[in-house]
Image (cartoon, rainbow, N blue to C red; front, top):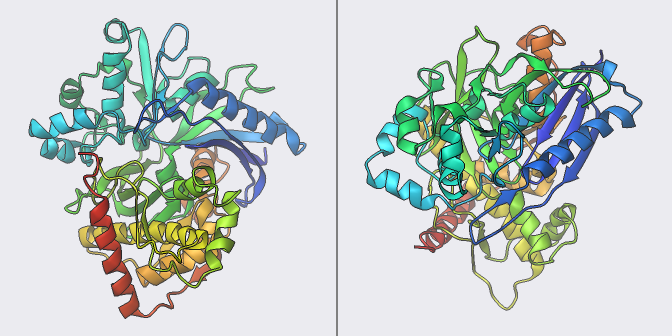
Length: 497
């Protein structure tokens, strides 16, 4: 069985990737699905469309390259994390669209939780700040706003979960209702110290325990696919939320190692070892992974930037400045700098370390000489500035000077962005040979569970560098640019109050 099948269910697309024993990619199949915007600040997905798109790409990945299901040793799942689905147990039919992690509709619930004095309690137990980003308030909103939902939940008729749980349910035809700690730790309902759902938090958010999935480790055989999903049943053996999967796929297996993923959003994680580290700089403490039922949990510090690659999509879909996302680098490189333009892409509020649900996108410095190339360059630079803000907070929290940043995700292929990132960080940016590290992490977790790889040291030997971007910008210029960025950032805040 020479391959692991990774299902990478992201915010804008579902992908399936076949990995060989050397970590090389045999086949990638991707399919985008609809983004639904019912109101300002609301973002939804159709759960059935997520499932059908994910199943279709998985089947195509197996069949297209002359591979058969008998060649697949196991399936690993990685997923957009906080996005939440509630469905009927009996029928498996969702009672509402999936509420996406970017959605801000529960900001008022979060305001009330803060006003009631729950910020310290929630941070101490979960490692999280109170924010609409996380799953708990999304579950509460669905139960309170879908007719009859709360009564059904109290009778044990509903199930809920993040996207990993939804896919596991569908792959197993309802036999598996499980999640792993990396996803559970993103709900505001999970206690980092105990590794369990927390009764006090469940009561606070009014979420019945019966609706929640069972907790398993990140690397074990959970069960098999339902006959008929593929031509043979396949073991499902690895789960991790996308950013923790990327940390694992980047081989950040030792204390102090950090990575940043450039996807729809930007997510920086640092391995902080076997004890959670509660942030003093409004970062998140999160569970990184648990390698097997009897293994200790490892933890990470995380800083989340809500809009990264989505800013490039906005240039494409909203403004029509580019026809495809791949065009942005050449357009941005056609000018020597942004022409004094600063673009703060706070389209869904600001994440770490600001946590302003009411901030909105802001463009400053426009003159008559501003061109679409300046917009493109400012959009890329806005991504890098946000990452630098998170890195500052992370170094302050950990007391560790990060001597390199490992990068992955689609936008890490953009050389202009990576060079500017190294310049603004004044630190090397290291891009691996395989930038699909989110899917690779899920494959590693599944492969370890079934003996495809024998131990973490074997997978560590697979990781290879593609390119190192060294900083070249004058440090004084970096200081000046970051000062102007912070000025633009302040003007984006509190817009929707």
